[in-house]
Length: 509
Image (cartoon, rainbow, N blue to C red; front, side, top):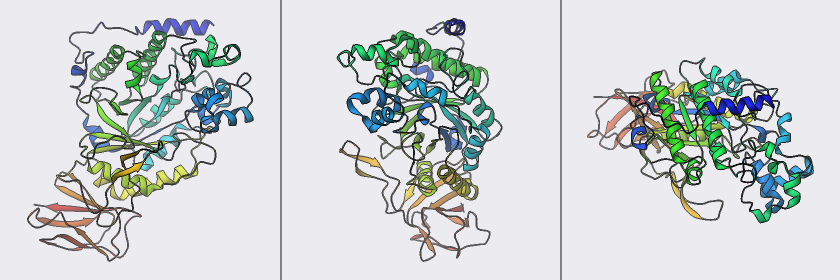
């Protein structure tokens, strides 16, 4: 109890709703002022980042990171079979609630150097973890919230170890993603007063006030209390670990319900930016699109979840994020339908449009990373070692692509609705080319190997560009090539230099 009181006092010291802005600080708590923070060049150069979805929900390993919501709602709906799975394996909710997984979340195989080492081996230029998901359990050594990994479960400062591991690499930046803006009311889902029986109020832990800072909901806490702790958590991470990039999930809806209010979000971001400016640190905040952007569109880095709601004419700069395999966290007997080739062709296409690609790993509950995920990551890394110069530090050319395969079309979503969606699972051909440029070099990346050994790039006609030399990345020999009114034609070597996607470096006048 003494420790908890200390937490509250420390929380109060953060000054949750501080608006005493220093006039000479570069950033004020307005969208207009914050939007003047230009996107750092390191973000434009990095192209590829990796983080993780891992937490308490990884222990039962069923359904995904929404386990807690599906569990307590499940007595009525049994979404993803979570409620039936849980009650059959662990017992009824009055005997075993979500919090009871915490002592099981010991993570004996977690090794930050191994996690970050794998990210770096894959070619990631920024990395981190989801520090706190919708379930409200923090993966850092927190003094403002007792529900954290340093005092429970693993009893380790998970994010602190990750941050230290990332900063061992001179070519990596630190990412922090926060999903707890959606935590208020999340565990109880769509429950109304009429859905909560006296027995549930008496026996279920989500309705017990002593757990309110884990199970934030209207029965045990208030939006103002939640906002205070939301703010304290963000500022604690900002002050302690100084991340280079922050990504928020679902703040648009949360701000509409004042948990947290927009004014508080503005204050937090301005403090983050001002601290970074004082430290001469180039930082950004990701602006997620989920029907609408979290924040006004000119602010931060535009982000689209696996391209959802991303327009066809999207241009520099933007980010798409994706799980290495769905669901977003590890589940028992997880399947990996997509290999390194799928993720790499996505990266190539996204980069050619002026985008950044963020991939989420899904470690197991014990802290290990499955062999399937390791294989995919190492496959990406092998390609990057050969072709990375056509990706890192590049900028879009005047056109991003040529070829017959369309990556955008009509698909049926999980609600049965037909919508325009991005689809990088297409069977690409050698005629599908993606362009990037860096300095005096133009790169043309073919998304497949030509069966006849002749690679044609139709956009590179004589009247378009005067080519001086052509080199195939990963191939030591010279190439036979010619440029005509129909484009550039290259005789490829007998053996491909890598497993998929082949990059030409082109020098021109």
